[in-house]
Image (cartoon, rainbow, N blue to C red; front, top):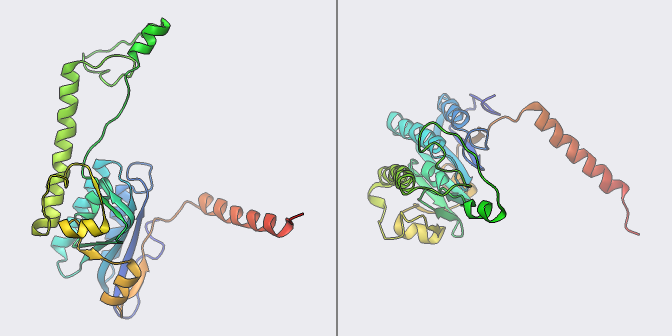
Length: 260
């Protein structure tokens, strides 16, 4: 359930490779309970010499991101001689970078997108549209701010201020996590915490990442004698079957089709 190769016993050193790809959150590609379990499984291997996380995420839930961040921080404290290294593929944005900031080291491709240290909540106000077409909205609440995000009613100034305070506090938690994780390596500029994204090459200059590298290069250069072991969420059997059937069906279509 937790891993494709749990607690394997190879002779010699082992590097755990954990792919984190997709949106972060409940019932999403990266769920905290699942990936915290994978990290725990990796550390149960007595031959573990390092953990490499393959990160490719646009972000998602700050709660799930924070839980994984805390789990990585705990491992760093309890196993200081076992580095946790994040290697960014296409992107580590928002919650993806939140998680990465906890790592011992972060690497990326020169064209990877890194950062987006910010919080967003978007919606729309369609109250004027209802009035224009002659529709009356009926919403019953107990608590004057219960329906403050209702798109069919104007937002009060009180609700705007309080919701902005929630976003600001969440943003500050993100900022604090990045500062703690990156420490003196981080160069704070006007853009770093603005929600802007940076290329890998730009991110090196301001200390968001430690250098440019791919997973293959990192493993070859840093751990040439270690065995890479992939720890990944095991798909449900029906999903695996559907994927296999899809490949088989596509193969049959290709083999029986011809160009006229």
